[in-house]
Image (cartoon, rainbow, N blue to C red):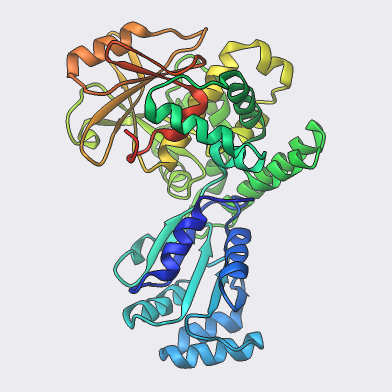
Amino acid sequence: MERKIEAFFEKWQKDLIRKPLILYGPKQVGKTFTVLNFAKKEYKNTVYFNTENNLELIDLFSREKNTEKIILNLSLLSGETILKEDTLIVLDNLDSIEIVKSLKLFGSERSKYHIIAITSRKERLNEFKGEELQFKGMNEMDFEEYCWAKDEKALSSLIRESFTKHKVCPFHKVALDLFHEYLITGGLPEVVQAELDGKSPYEIDAIKQKIIDIYKKEISLNKILIDIPRGIEVLNSIPSQLRKDNKKFQYGCMGAGKRAKEYDSAINYLVNNQLAYRSYKIKNVKSPLSSCREKDSFKLYLPDDGLLFTMLHLNLKQFATDEKIKETLYENHIAKTLVEAGYSLYYYQSEGKAEVNFVIQNRMGQIIPIEIATKSMSKAKSLSVFIKKFITQQAYRITENNFSTKKEVRYIPVYAVFCLNDQKI
């Protein structure tokens, strides 16, 4: 399956000041498969190491400080000749601080060896961000990549063209129906492949449940989070929190007497490792938006729509007939798409409880409100009041209808949210 990140790999490969690349993201999003597939196409050979509990490898990187000797030993361990520029060294399941420290040597020397390390534990690596290493996040397939996998590349191109040129999409219903399939399936490659292979909804649901269990195991094996049960408790709570009319995360929903300070580290762990996305409440709007956030008022979203569908124990009939369920899935989809496009998330709520679902700030400093408007949720006044009060130049309303513009607001069909990135708005 074609992934957008391949274009980044190509640019990294050709970079004259290329550094070792740390590719991070949750398990099951396709990191290893995509890297190895890229290596197969672009390199003469690939040397692969699974670093998880690999004491011999960890010992090598810990004791050896000469990069050429490290390469020689890697060649001996793999039985492969490692060539500058022509071999890709892949270090999978990276969790060793000693290996990361050693990779910094390759970066500081501007080494000609090509190295990609893959990890699902981003939080442990934050202290190493600097000039010697390059970091890149990878997520599940977005709706555009899902279109590609479904052999609907022409449709995704039409959607982008409609967004860019402010014109209606001629295949609106086709796009909306396919998007609804995506909401149910999600963007995890194993699940998408199962759908392409014609697996039944029950088989697909079993795969998604297996992945949910993998995420819970990932939480239980981490070396940072002190209170593991609370991390799993928060993850389990997110779907029911999103089903509420007031989607603000409420500790009481997990049981009587639950307090914020007991769960801070668990929530931070989930957010830092992309197992949950957080949107902060703001009551005022000024630049930067981060200065307006209320740290104790936030919503949490899941990084994959298909997992949310499964964790809510939904079926196709409920999705087709219950507008509130669609609203929940739409909001989660918009949240995770914006985060994965690089935005920090905020939602606006006035003293009178008027709410704008999302407020983002692009790289040019523009503040942009985004509101969801479905059959069960029409809040035209909230967005209009926000625009007048804070004098914003751009505003979007996400709907199930085709592209249009009314007064100062652009109406965007929900399937086109992937077009909302800094290059397009």
